[in-house]
Length: 338
Image (cartoon, rainbow, N blue to C red; front, side, top):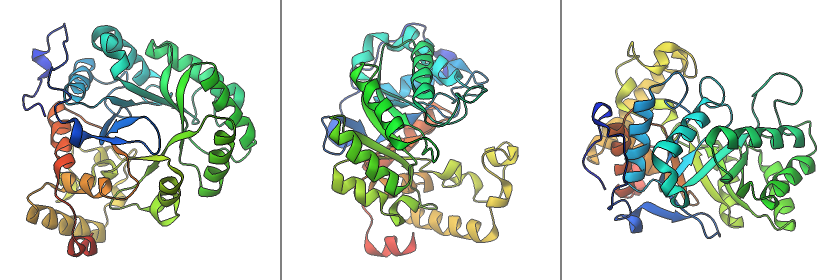
């Protein structure tokens, strides 16, 4: 791994990727289900810190740091920002400024499913919305295709066959190489898997939230189903939006995401949760790890997990998260605690 941290103010305009970026390949990558795709155990999400309201220099430093350390997978969605679409615009600028020569080394994903534009065709899972959204995404990202395209959420009103056939046709038209599903319930996931397989576009991966505070895909049987069917699984929010870091161990800092009371509400940090986080932190300290390292490592040690999606507010934070790749395994006593 790279040990030198790239500072925003020292970023050279010309970027040449590190010659050592694949030195840890044996430890860093996992096969995605029963496919030919290898994904890094830690992938970079563009949900936060890559929007139009954020510093481009900081986003550029984080993306460079990621790729220099072998993180080849960048995860986006049409409405990441804010404002909507601006994270994809940031990626488009990054491609032109830094990553165009490395396009074939990158595995870029985007999604459609949540609110994107006004009116009846800017949301959910219709064929019209999916095709229009991906066309817009490709223009913003300045790409001819994405490696992975997701249906971002289950649509209970559009026939599943309409959504799934749109995904099949996107691959056949060369606009995406692989298809993924995000946050669909188990029964709909089964239908999707069977439909895509029957149409020669097998599902590559499922994206769901698994962390030490939320194990719903495990409890519902989704992770087990994916493993048995040869579908990869990538966990978003493996640090529970920062709760599983040292950020909130002593309450709510004034400059924290929870203090802004937007995605992470203050009422979430109950006395019971705070006590649990402090116990987890004590366990991490005994292991010689930070709480974040242990939390990421725990997810990566679950059978069937391909990768964890992490956000980062700095390249330093990203490098700390990468330590989870080399974390020690969990024994039975620790499993009982967590």
